[in-house]
Image 1 (cartoon, helix red, strand yellow):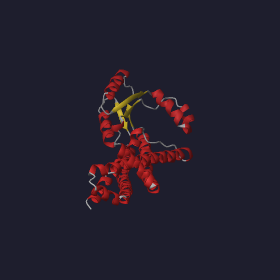
Image 2 (image 1 turned 60 degrees about the vertical axis):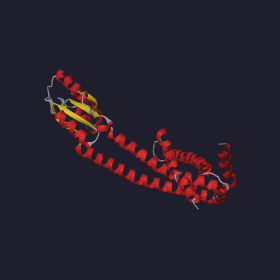
Image 3 (image 1 turned 135 degrees about the vertical axis):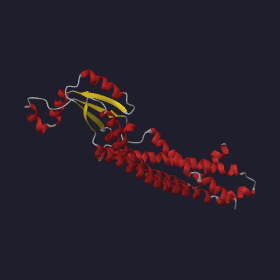
Image 4 (image 1 turned 180 degrees about the vertical axis):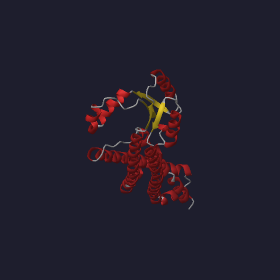
Length: 283
């Protein structure tokens, strides 16, 4: 094991320029992928914040007994799709209207009778905020006898649904393209390092070295380069995030789980190393 580590470290001393070039290539390949990941993460956060505004409002018939409303509220909260259901009285509705509709504040203040009905505001769980589930819950609310009307902005919810589908499709296609390009570039970089020592590998084969003995230093060397390049990529991605967050718009950075995905990318790229070694050994 000590021999494997020593040989791997000696490779950096023998060709420092090529090693630095390999680490830099890996870093910038993963950095480009990281930039796309930042865009995808922030786009998802933006869509999630917009989806949080999706709610259904059930307007109640005038004179609905408070007991019937309380029972209905418990039934609505028991729906599997519902996160919370809030009762809004006529007085509360008028107070909100006066606070939010500033241009009509004088008109609303001079009203002799409150024209606004009581309502129940229903917020759905994050996984049920699509058009189909919203429509299903709205239809269920219409079945209550004390409900006069149900509104949820069907067109707006359908457009949000469509936007999420487009964002997901673009993310998959573009992300896969960036990932493939990164794998090709990183794999080619590692193969260049292997080809540089093809003569040494051939001599080792002539003196009876086993395949495992030959491969292990290259695999460890590739792992070290991948770790260094990945760490540099995460650092560059964080620097880009800090600049965007400070000078352009408020942004979010990767979670620990998302940042760890870079290591999967490095493992995928290193597949090319043993394959290339097999080809050279077969010569």
